[in-house]
Image (cartoon, rainbow, N blue to C red; front, top):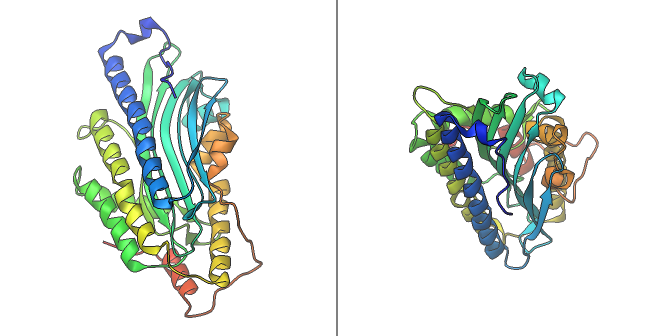
Length: 323
Protein backbone atom coordinates (compact mmCIF):
# COMPACT_ATOMS: atom_id res chain seq x y z
CA UNK A 1 0.00 0.00 0.00
CA UNK A 2 1.47 3.32 -1.01
CA UNK A 3 1.51 6.15 1.49
CA UNK A 4 -1.75 8.15 1.28
CA UNK A 5 -1.66 11.89 1.76
CA UNK A 6 -3.46 13.18 4.83
CA UNK A 7 -2.41 16.85 4.66
CA UNK A 8 -5.44 19.09 4.60
CA UNK A 9 -3.62 22.03 3.05
CA UNK A 10 -0.16 23.57 2.95
CA UNK A 11 -1.17 26.41 5.24
CA UNK A 12 -2.10 23.89 7.90
CA UNK A 13 1.54 22.73 8.09
CA UNK A 14 2.96 25.96 9.47
CA UNK A 15 3.03 25.43 13.25
CA UNK A 16 5.92 23.57 14.83
CA UNK A 17 3.53 21.41 16.88
CA UNK A 18 1.75 20.21 13.79
CA UNK A 19 5.03 19.29 12.11
CA UNK A 20 6.02 17.27 15.16
CA UNK A 21 2.66 15.51 15.13
CA UNK A 22 2.96 14.68 11.45
CA UNK A 23 6.33 13.10 12.21
CA UNK A 24 4.78 10.80 14.83
CA UNK A 25 1.94 9.96 12.45
CA UNK A 26 4.32 9.12 9.62
CA UNK A 27 6.56 7.12 11.93
CA UNK A 28 3.66 5.01 13.10
CA UNK A 29 2.26 4.45 9.62
CA UNK A 30 5.67 3.24 8.46
CA UNK A 31 5.92 1.05 11.55
CA UNK A 32 2.62 -0.80 11.08
CA UNK A 33 3.42 -1.52 7.45
CA UNK A 34 6.70 -3.16 8.44
CA UNK A 35 5.11 -4.94 11.39
CA UNK A 36 2.41 -6.43 9.18
CA UNK A 37 5.10 -7.93 6.95
CA UNK A 38 7.09 -9.24 9.91
CA UNK A 39 4.07 -10.88 11.56
CA UNK A 40 2.56 -12.44 8.44
CA UNK A 41 5.92 -13.84 7.30
CA UNK A 42 6.47 -15.51 10.66
CA UNK A 43 2.94 -16.90 10.86
CA UNK A 44 3.22 -18.41 7.37
CA UNK A 45 6.40 -20.11 8.53
CA UNK A 46 4.65 -21.46 11.63
CA UNK A 47 1.66 -22.72 9.62
CA UNK A 48 3.79 -24.39 6.97
CA UNK A 49 0.96 -24.70 4.45
CA UNK A 50 -1.25 -21.65 3.98
CA UNK A 51 -0.20 -18.19 2.88
CA UNK A 52 -1.84 -14.86 3.55
CA UNK A 53 -4.00 -13.52 0.75
CA UNK A 54 -3.54 -9.78 0.34
CA UNK A 55 -6.36 -7.39 -0.44
CA UNK A 56 -5.64 -3.69 -0.95
CA UNK A 57 -8.68 -1.46 -0.62
CA UNK A 58 -9.65 2.20 -0.70
CA UNK A 59 -12.18 4.06 1.41
CA UNK A 60 -14.30 6.45 -0.70
CA UNK A 61 -14.27 9.11 2.03
CA UNK A 62 -10.48 9.01 2.30
CA UNK A 63 -7.67 6.55 2.90
CA UNK A 64 -7.63 2.81 2.68
CA UNK A 65 -5.87 -0.28 3.87
CA UNK A 66 -4.21 -3.59 3.22
CA UNK A 67 -5.89 -6.74 4.53
CA UNK A 68 -4.01 -10.02 4.75
CA UNK A 69 -6.09 -13.12 5.49
CA UNK A 70 -5.01 -16.71 6.04
CA UNK A 71 -7.50 -19.61 5.85
CA UNK A 72 -7.56 -23.40 6.06
CA UNK A 73 -3.95 -23.81 7.01
CA UNK A 74 -2.26 -26.57 8.95
CA UNK A 75 -2.34 -24.45 12.12
CA UNK A 76 -4.58 -21.46 11.43
CA UNK A 77 -8.16 -22.12 10.43
CA UNK A 78 -8.69 -18.41 9.85
CA UNK A 79 -6.82 -15.25 10.66
CA UNK A 80 -6.24 -11.73 9.53
CA UNK A 81 -3.48 -9.17 9.94
CA UNK A 82 -4.85 -5.88 8.64
CA UNK A 83 -3.55 -2.34 8.43
CA UNK A 84 -5.50 0.78 7.57
CA UNK A 85 -5.04 4.53 7.41
CA UNK A 86 -8.28 6.45 6.99
CA UNK A 87 -9.23 10.10 7.20
CA UNK A 88 -11.99 12.59 6.46
CA UNK A 89 -15.00 14.11 8.15
CA UNK A 90 -15.82 12.52 11.48
CA UNK A 91 -19.36 11.05 11.18
CA UNK A 92 -22.05 12.79 13.21
CA UNK A 93 -22.52 9.78 15.47
CA UNK A 94 -18.83 9.83 16.37
CA UNK A 95 -18.84 13.63 16.78
CA UNK A 96 -21.58 13.21 19.36
CA UNK A 97 -19.53 10.52 21.09
CA UNK A 98 -16.45 12.77 21.29
CA UNK A 99 -18.47 15.95 21.99
CA UNK A 100 -17.22 17.86 18.92
CA UNK A 101 -18.72 19.43 15.80
CA UNK A 102 -17.48 19.65 12.22
CA UNK A 103 -14.37 17.66 13.06
CA UNK A 104 -11.97 15.91 10.71
CA UNK A 105 -10.00 12.83 11.71
CA UNK A 106 -7.08 10.61 10.80
CA UNK A 107 -6.68 7.09 12.15
CA UNK A 108 -4.21 4.35 11.36
CA UNK A 109 -3.48 1.03 12.94
CA UNK A 110 -2.82 -2.67 12.69
CA UNK A 111 -5.40 -5.19 13.89
CA UNK A 112 -5.01 -8.94 13.98
CA UNK A 113 -7.00 -11.99 15.05
CA UNK A 114 -5.90 -15.61 14.68
CA UNK A 115 -8.20 -18.60 15.12
CA UNK A 116 -6.22 -21.87 15.20
CA UNK A 117 -7.80 -25.18 14.25
CA UNK A 118 -6.54 -27.09 17.29
CA UNK A 119 -8.57 -26.21 20.42
CA UNK A 120 -5.39 -26.59 22.49
CA UNK A 121 -4.00 -23.48 20.77
CA UNK A 122 -5.54 -20.20 21.93
CA UNK A 123 -7.07 -17.54 19.76
CA UNK A 124 -5.18 -14.28 19.92
CA UNK A 125 -6.10 -10.67 19.22
CA UNK A 126 -3.92 -7.58 19.01
CA UNK A 127 -4.34 -4.01 17.90
CA UNK A 128 -2.09 -0.95 17.85
CA UNK A 129 -3.47 2.38 16.61
CA UNK A 130 -3.04 6.13 16.41
CA UNK A 131 -5.77 8.78 16.12
CA UNK A 132 -5.82 12.51 15.40
CA UNK A 133 -8.77 14.89 15.35
CA UNK A 134 -8.75 18.31 13.64
CA UNK A 135 -10.88 21.43 13.76
CA UNK A 136 -12.22 23.26 10.69
CA UNK A 137 -8.84 24.93 10.17
CA UNK A 138 -6.97 21.64 10.15
CA UNK A 139 -5.44 22.18 13.57
CA UNK A 140 -5.03 19.13 15.77
CA UNK A 141 -7.45 19.36 18.69
CA UNK A 142 -6.83 15.86 20.06
CA UNK A 143 -4.54 12.88 19.46
CA UNK A 144 -3.77 9.60 21.13
CA UNK A 145 -2.38 6.10 20.84
CA UNK A 146 -4.17 2.92 21.83
CA UNK A 147 -3.91 -0.81 21.54
CA UNK A 148 -2.97 -4.00 23.30
CA UNK A 149 -2.86 -7.77 22.93
CA UNK A 150 -4.90 -10.48 24.62
CA UNK A 151 -5.20 -14.25 24.69
CA UNK A 152 -8.36 -16.37 24.44
CA UNK A 153 -7.65 -20.04 25.25
CA UNK A 154 -10.17 -22.88 25.02
CA UNK A 155 -8.18 -25.09 27.37
CA UNK A 156 -6.15 -23.49 30.10
CA UNK A 157 -2.41 -24.19 30.24
CA UNK A 158 -1.12 -22.07 33.10
CA UNK A 159 2.41 -22.04 31.68
CA UNK A 160 1.08 -20.46 28.50
CA UNK A 161 -0.84 -17.81 30.43
CA UNK A 162 2.22 -16.96 32.50
CA UNK A 163 4.42 -16.77 29.41
CA UNK A 164 2.05 -14.44 27.54
CA UNK A 165 1.65 -12.13 30.50
CA UNK A 166 5.37 -12.12 31.31
CA UNK A 167 6.19 -10.94 27.80
CA UNK A 168 3.57 -8.21 28.16
CA UNK A 169 4.99 -7.17 31.53
CA UNK A 170 8.56 -7.08 30.24
CA UNK A 171 7.55 -4.76 27.39
CA UNK A 172 5.67 -2.49 29.80
CA UNK A 173 8.43 -2.40 32.42
CA UNK A 174 10.87 -0.93 29.91
CA UNK A 175 8.74 2.23 29.93
CA UNK A 176 6.99 2.40 33.31
CA UNK A 177 6.88 -0.04 36.21
CA UNK A 178 3.17 0.66 36.75
CA UNK A 179 2.03 0.10 33.16
CA UNK A 180 1.59 -3.67 33.26
CA UNK A 181 -0.63 -3.78 36.33
CA UNK A 182 -2.69 -0.83 35.11
CA UNK A 183 -3.19 -2.03 31.53
CA UNK A 184 -3.71 -5.65 32.59
CA UNK A 185 -6.61 -4.52 34.77
CA UNK A 186 -8.01 -2.43 31.93
CA UNK A 187 -7.80 -5.47 29.66
CA UNK A 188 -9.68 -7.67 32.13
CA UNK A 189 -12.34 -4.96 32.42
CA UNK A 190 -12.66 -4.21 28.69
CA UNK A 191 -12.72 -7.73 27.23
CA UNK A 192 -15.62 -8.74 29.43
CA UNK A 193 -18.95 -10.15 28.31
CA UNK A 194 -21.13 -8.43 30.89
CA UNK A 195 -24.20 -10.29 29.65
CA UNK A 196 -22.40 -13.56 30.46
CA UNK A 197 -20.55 -12.35 33.56
CA UNK A 198 -17.30 -13.69 32.21
CA UNK A 199 -14.17 -12.48 30.44
CA UNK A 200 -13.65 -13.15 26.76
CA UNK A 201 -10.25 -14.64 27.56
CA UNK A 202 -7.39 -14.43 30.04
CA UNK A 203 -6.43 -10.89 29.09
CA UNK A 204 -3.12 -9.24 28.45
CA UNK A 205 -2.87 -5.51 27.85
CA UNK A 206 -5.39 -2.86 26.86
CA UNK A 207 -4.63 0.85 26.67
CA UNK A 208 -6.46 3.72 25.03
CA UNK A 209 -6.46 7.52 24.90
CA UNK A 210 -2.71 7.61 25.57
CA UNK A 211 -2.22 11.37 25.31
CA UNK A 212 0.53 13.84 26.12
CA UNK A 213 1.13 14.22 29.85
CA UNK A 214 3.91 15.88 31.86
CA UNK A 215 5.56 12.46 31.98
CA UNK A 216 4.81 11.04 28.51
CA UNK A 217 4.95 12.92 25.21
CA UNK A 218 3.62 11.51 21.96
CA UNK A 219 7.07 10.25 21.02
CA UNK A 220 7.22 8.42 24.37
CA UNK A 221 3.85 6.83 23.70
CA UNK A 222 5.04 5.85 20.23
CA UNK A 223 8.04 4.13 21.77
CA UNK A 224 5.83 2.28 24.25
CA UNK A 225 3.19 1.16 21.74
CA UNK A 226 5.79 -0.07 19.27
CA UNK A 227 7.56 -1.92 22.09
CA UNK A 228 4.34 -3.82 22.74
CA UNK A 229 3.84 -4.42 19.03
CA UNK A 230 7.33 -5.82 18.70
CA UNK A 231 6.66 -8.20 21.60
CA UNK A 232 3.67 -9.88 19.98
CA UNK A 233 5.42 -12.73 18.19
CA UNK A 234 7.49 -13.49 21.30
CA UNK A 235 4.30 -13.65 23.34
CA UNK A 236 2.27 -15.87 21.02
CA UNK A 237 4.39 -18.02 18.70
CA UNK A 238 6.07 -20.16 21.43
CA UNK A 239 2.59 -21.10 22.68
CA UNK A 240 1.46 -22.10 19.20
CA UNK A 241 4.54 -24.19 18.57
CA UNK A 242 4.13 -25.97 21.91
CA UNK A 243 0.43 -26.85 21.44
CA UNK A 244 -0.29 -27.12 17.70
CA UNK A 245 0.42 -30.84 17.40
CA UNK A 246 -1.45 -31.97 20.52
CA UNK A 247 -4.28 -34.45 19.93
CA UNK A 248 -7.90 -33.47 20.59
CA UNK A 249 -11.34 -35.02 20.47
CA UNK A 250 -14.57 -34.09 18.71
CA UNK A 251 -15.99 -33.00 22.08
CA UNK A 252 -13.04 -30.67 22.63
CA UNK A 253 -13.52 -29.20 19.17
CA UNK A 254 -17.21 -28.64 19.99
CA UNK A 255 -16.20 -26.79 23.15
CA UNK A 256 -13.86 -24.60 21.11
CA UNK A 257 -16.72 -23.68 18.78
CA UNK A 258 -19.04 -22.91 21.69
CA UNK A 259 -16.40 -20.60 23.18
CA UNK A 260 -15.91 -19.01 19.78
CA UNK A 261 -19.55 -18.04 20.01
CA UNK A 262 -18.73 -15.99 23.09
CA UNK A 263 -15.95 -14.34 21.11
CA UNK A 264 -18.44 -13.36 18.41
CA UNK A 265 -20.85 -12.02 21.01
CA UNK A 266 -18.23 -9.70 22.45
CA UNK A 267 -17.12 -8.36 19.09
CA UNK A 268 -20.64 -7.62 17.92
CA UNK A 269 -22.11 -6.38 21.20
CA UNK A 270 -19.31 -4.62 23.07
CA UNK A 271 -16.22 -3.95 20.96
CA UNK A 272 -15.55 -0.25 20.37
CA UNK A 273 -13.26 -0.90 17.42
CA UNK A 274 -15.99 -2.75 15.56
CA UNK A 275 -18.41 0.07 16.35
CA UNK A 276 -15.95 2.73 15.13
CA UNK A 277 -15.34 0.86 11.89
CA UNK A 278 -19.03 0.44 11.17
CA UNK A 279 -19.85 4.07 11.98
CA UNK A 280 -17.02 5.47 9.85
CA UNK A 281 -18.03 3.42 6.80
CA UNK A 282 -15.07 1.12 7.19
CA UNK A 283 -14.58 -1.91 5.02
CA UNK A 284 -16.97 -4.59 6.26
CA UNK A 285 -14.82 -7.56 5.24
CA UNK A 286 -11.87 -6.16 7.18
CA UNK A 287 -13.95 -5.21 10.23
CA UNK A 288 -15.57 -8.64 10.47
CA UNK A 289 -12.49 -10.69 9.57
CA UNK A 290 -12.15 -11.34 13.33
CA UNK A 291 -15.15 -13.69 13.27
CA UNK A 292 -14.26 -17.41 13.29
CA UNK A 293 -15.48 -19.66 10.45
CA UNK A 294 -17.10 -22.37 12.59
CA UNK A 295 -19.11 -21.46 15.70
CA UNK A 296 -21.78 -23.09 17.87
CA UNK A 297 -24.47 -21.72 20.13
CA UNK A 298 -25.76 -24.56 22.28
CA UNK A 299 -28.77 -23.76 24.42
CA UNK A 300 -27.87 -23.38 28.11
CA UNK A 301 -24.60 -25.26 27.71
CA UNK A 302 -22.87 -26.03 31.00
CA UNK A 303 -19.58 -27.92 31.30
CA UNK A 304 -19.26 -30.90 33.63
CA UNK A 305 -18.31 -29.96 37.21
CA UNK A 306 -14.59 -30.43 37.79
CA UNK A 307 -13.81 -30.67 34.06
CA UNK A 308 -11.08 -28.79 32.20
CA UNK A 309 -13.82 -26.78 30.54
CA UNK A 310 -15.21 -25.68 33.90
CA UNK A 311 -11.69 -24.84 35.06
CA UNK A 312 -11.41 -22.36 32.21
CA UNK A 313 -14.76 -20.78 33.05
CA UNK A 314 -13.75 -20.22 36.64
CA UNK A 315 -10.71 -18.25 35.50
CA UNK A 316 -12.82 -16.25 33.05
CA UNK A 317 -15.16 -15.28 35.86
CA UNK A 318 -12.33 -14.51 38.28
CA UNK A 319 -9.27 -12.95 36.60
CA UNK A 320 -5.91 -14.25 37.76
CA UNK A 321 -2.67 -12.37 38.48
CA UNK A 322 -0.45 -14.48 36.21
CA UNK A 323 2.85 -12.73 36.94
